[in-house]
Image (tube, rainbow, N blue to C red; front, side, top):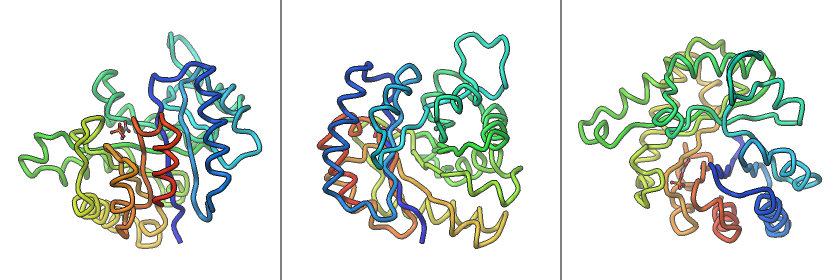
Length: 252
Ligand code: PEP
């Protein structure tokens, strides 16, 4: 059975006090839930990772990073390495979010290098990708997603896929209030699984968790999560509110 995952990407939100409070509230809220086979993840900003790890200690909440540089160390002003993250206890890193691709010029090639650094450091990644609205309108969305995945991940050996969580996030649905329908999400997730199976084998494809991201809210989470190839969600806006995020966790 694939692991279910609800991950909250806090982006550039929540200072130290707010991060600690949100984790404390979430801890209380999910205590009552049965989290069988479900991972609950939050991704605070770099400066609040240590305080968040401390706040989450002893709970089921996992704290992950939103990004990472591929180099071991060196003259990369403003960047954070795998060693630095590991040293404070981070095990998982989100890579390739559309905001990183759009505002910080991340490319399939730079993301492939980041994924290599993840694996060299025994870390895990939540790897994000997804098409633009114009790609969907021109019915190019399958080709775009296939090229994003193959360019950044298909150089990996089958074994490496144990450290990969995929997050399909159609860019037109991120922060817009517009969600892909459950059918659109399922169609794309099944396609993603099929290309992984074709490149590797069915076992690898069946084992990889594929999350959906894009305006998931408590009101639409259940329908999206009910689809057989949707293994959970990467949540932006709704992860900043304890009731909304807990509502989404309940839906899984
Ligand atoms: C995201 O940024 O990954 C995301 C899915 O955001 P939102 O849930 O706000 O659309």
